[in-house]
Length: 273
Image (tube, rainbow, N blue to C red; front, side):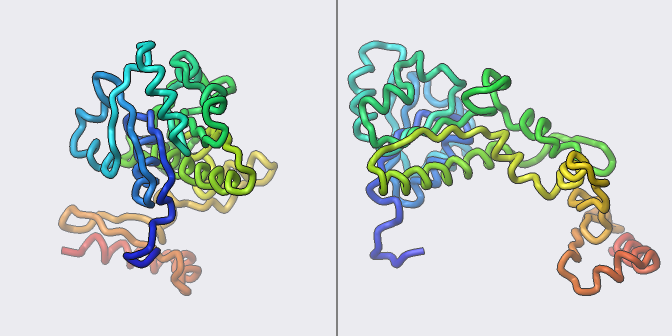
């Protein structure tokens, strides 16, 4: 992105990170990688993620850490000093928690009108699901993503798609807010719902469902979960699997239309040593 002698793009940006576990810490890890100075605020017992290594070190490297008991009135002065210092504040508590701890967006804005205040929650800070803790598995299920497999099975995903979607959209929102602040001189609140972030990424697997909701048939389906023989995995003779993707192959229409070609391909794969 830059020459070794150049400053990183977020050099000089100061981030105050109250988040724990994965979505917030990964977002601030990305900001730190682009040059931001990140101070992680932890409770006296530490971030619960500290007991999950090497995960914790992977998503928190490049940061400094400070311990503050936000329920202790003695922490109020250092907390407010940090808020005045920061360009960006990131938190991942349920709606209402930061208000009870005396560090709501409204209070932060009083202390520092330029602050960009990013809240990462499962379902946003308002609405009928706002009170529910947003864990990755539940969010993946509610988006409909886990129901797209052609066999109807919904195994626990091996990838935390909702967590990482929330992280990435938080970074995008923070960068957009910083760009806006450069023009207006005033910060803002970034209300990031992990559900909305992941749902926004599901336009391919959920395209048929969206089409049916709009009154169309939803056919043919964009089968990205194994229903399409050109885009699937096949078990080989030695019990392993091979991935086949002929999406960009100029001959894919002929391949898809020819059952003989498909049978021949499957036979070759299953007989591979």
